[in-house]
Length: 171
Image (cartoon, rainbow, N blue to C red; front, side, top):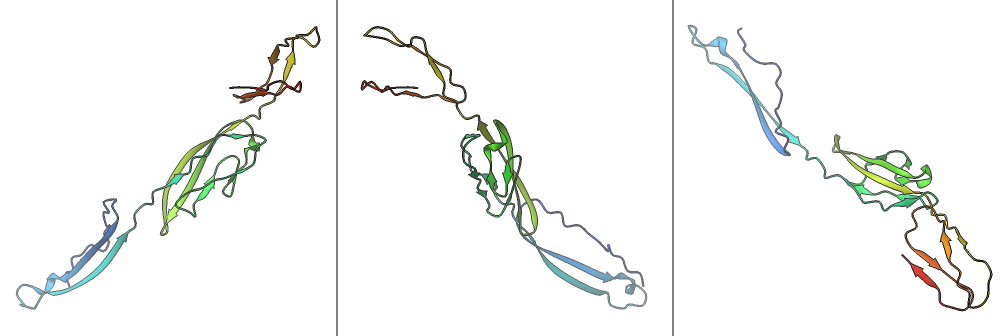
C-alpha cells in the first residue's frame, strides 16, 4: 500500500541529563491521489530520561607505613567498588610493602556505568631507629656524640637520657 517509514532510529543524546519527548508519526501516503482517500496517520510518543553522571571522587588517603593498620577507603558516591593492589572490599592493607599504589573507585548509577575515580596511596617502610655512640666511657664531664643510623621515613627524633638531665627533640 506504499508505506514510507524508517523502522529504526537513534536518539542523539547531547550528553546532558534530563528528559526528552520523542514523537514518531507513521503515515500511509498511498491513499492520496486519484482515489481521493484520506491520508492515514498515527503517532506514538515516548519520554526518554537521560540520567546524569555522578560526581565521583576518592577521599584523600594519608601516607601509610608497612607495619601500620589497614585503612578504610571512602568515596562518592557511596556504593562504588574499590580496586587496586592492596585493596580488599573498601580496605587498603599497607602490608603490600613500600611504594605508590593506584586505587580506583568504579561506580554505576541508575543502571548506567559511571565514571571511574583514581587516586594513589603511598606506603612507606616503617622507620627503624638505630644509633651508636662515638664514646662509651670517659671522665666527667663527658660529652657523648651519637651517630643516627635510623632508616625509613623518620623526620623527627627524640633523644631521652636517663641521667636526670634534659631530654632533646629534633626535627
